[in-house]
Image 1: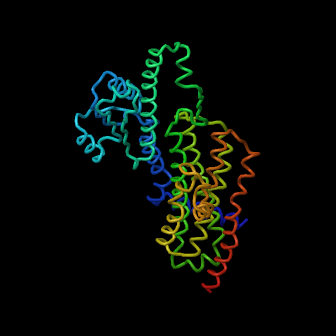
Image 2: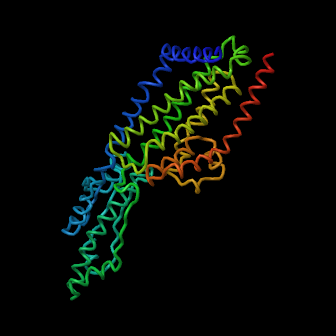
Image 3: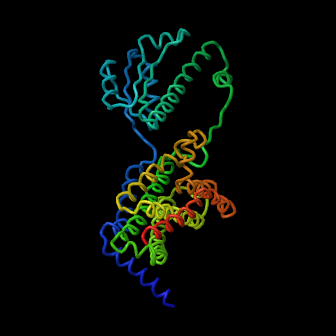
Length: 381
C-alpha cells in the first residue's frame, strides 16, 4: 500500500511541476495548437493555384493567342505577358515567375505547313513540386490546343470527322489517382509534418521531465527512486502526448474532412506504441549523457530529420542503405506505415498488429537501458 501511495505522490508531484513550469505547460497546451493552425494556414489552399508564368509571344497570331488561352485555362497557371525575352528571363531569375514560355516567330506558319516548330518552356526546378505541377499543366494545355490544330488539318485533307479523334489519339488512357484523387497537398504533406512535430513535442516532454532530476540528489534518485519516478513521468506525459496526436487526427479527418478509410481507434493503438518507443529512446539517452543540454541536443539530432525518412516524399527503397538503417531507429518511421494503412487502405487491427513487429530492432534499447542504469548505480556508489 505504501508503494502505491508513494507512486501516487510522485505522479501528483509531476502534475504540480508541470503546472508550475511555463515551458513544459506550453508544450502540452498552446504550442501544438499554434503549430497546427500555422501549418493549416500554409496548406489550406490544398492545391497551388494561379502560379505566375511568363509568356513571350513573338508570333502574335490567332493560333499563338489560342495556345495562351488554353494554358491560362488551367487553374494552376496565371500567365503574365512580356514583350521582350530578356525581361521575362530577368523576372524568372528574380523569382517573380516560376516558368517561362517562348512562342517563336513563324510558329503558326511552320505548324500549318507541316514543319516542326519549337516551342520553348522553362520552369524553375528548384521548387520541385511547383515545377512538376506547372510542367504537367502547361504541357496538358499545349497538347489540348495542338490537338485542335491537328484536327483542322485532318479535316482539310478529307478525313471524316468521326475518324479524326482516333487518328490523333488512337489509345484512350484512363488515368485515376488513387487515395488522393484531387492531388491535395494538404492531405499529402500535413499528416506527416504533424507527426514529425508530435514526435519532437513528445521527446521534449519526456526529456524535460527527466532533466529535472539532474540535481544534487541525482545519486539517490538513480539508486532508490528511478523506476517509481520514471513510471510516474510516463504515466503523466504519455497520455498527454497521445491526446495531442489524436487531436491532430480528429482535426485532419473530422473537422476539415480529409478522406479517412479506417478507424481512429486503430491509429490510437499504433500511436501509443510509437510514443512508448520515443520515451524509451529519451530514457536511454538521458542515462547515457545525464546533462540537460546534451540530452535535448542528442534527441533533437535523432528525431528532427524524421520527415525526410518517412518515405512519403521519397520512396524508402530508393534511399541509400545507410538512410534505410537510420530510418529504422526513428519511431515515427514505423508508425507512418500504420497510418497510411489505416487512412488510405482502411486496414484494421489484423494488419496493424503484425506491423508493430517492425519495432523489433528498437527492442535492443531495453538491455541497453538496464545496462546503463546498472553502470550509473555502480558509478554513483
